[in-house]
Image (cartoon, rainbow, N blue to C red; front, side, top):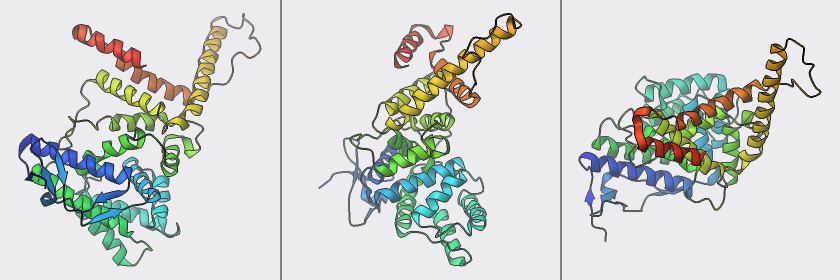
Length: 351
């Protein structure tokens, strides 16, 4: 027997319970694939010690590993408007049989997403019941060879129910905005790091390296995903458009998460391209310095063998972007005093 109070729960307690429910659902889906498919407020109890209890496990769903990570790849593709990534995962998940009708399907999917977001087109504004209706309409049209896999229907139904609970607590709550940071954090820094599933490794290589080849790092996307993932913390409120606030604090949190990712089994694949790109960046800085010396001396100093080599401008630009993040973490305004100084030392130790 579980003692508890059924929702909706008023005030901050309600937001806290919904946030815990989101995290639980993400963990269930990503860790084992076995998740509660009927999380309505009668099946969720706030316990006397402030925890959230799921009851009534009569409706469960079990999603295999390939489909789980294919679904996350599709979500990341939609969030980043990455058409190749969207296409790959639509095929992998069984929405499409081939790419022959892709040119007709993509505009139809864009229209469906726009309708499901109330016209904004933002993934964070998706209403899941509307999205399900839009996908069903595409299937019923029989113009395109498009079908919704059964497991996806179960997930959408579960999210629609959870969304209803969230909206009963706060009408401004956005489920995608709330769950996306948890998804990214579990992808990048899973709580259970004893093994990295092959499907997860393939997905991370696909989204975090150039052309998915595992040779060069997509620094800008990595930074953006890390910044989103660091929002998966106890103070995050998906009911509001959160401002970044203190940029130095944000950068420190991003750096911390980056090093957790890099030193985890999940992030091992980045080490080889990281060493290669650091070497290229060092060579590039040396070549730029040598070119400046030659220009200043107006050719009086003859170039030595190996001097003035090629510069990989993409690597230099992306390294500069990451260094700006580090610099922001180490910047201390004079008015911040000793507390900020301690934060600076902590950030330097992390770097």
